[in-house]
Length: 250
Image (cartoon, rainbow, N blue to C red):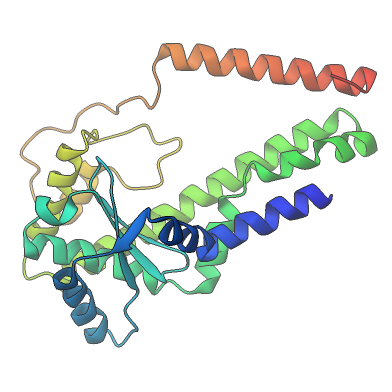
């Protein structure tokens, strides 16, 4: 139980900014370009909110993300050089929308990120209720993952709407999305099972823009080799747990 509580505290502290503090201390993040910070400051002032801290993260990918309850916005990789100033402004507007979600939503995001944490309790649960324990934990994991996906999709749609409404032209935000996906080699559509963001194709359509290409088939998240590996790993896990429930040792 103490190990579980420790893992729980660590998870929450990282989600609330502990990971950002550590990354800044280790030099993995730095203050972003002041010119970009001025854009964020102007957008936040227009909305009557305190601007989050803007940090730059070195990465081969290009992205932007609001983290730690909206206290930080991270610029990832070469996003500032990839996008035009107007396109970058729409992306910052999108992230600012996430910073206004409130602590109820933040708590829901933290809860949704803990879908695998309850498995640390399998031993005491199995001792109390036997073979039913893995089934209960599996249902709990599935439920939290579905909740996390629903919450993320809802507020991604909301942030997209804010970004397009704040822009002089919805096409600006759509162009930014198309550039980011092309640079990161991200498919325009994905399988729906675990997606936490709307498909690029749907986001561009929602902005009122024709993507210029027909809707592609969803790209699989893993190939057949990954499926085989996952099935084998799952079988071995079930076998190990079943053996422990029967003998008390792996």
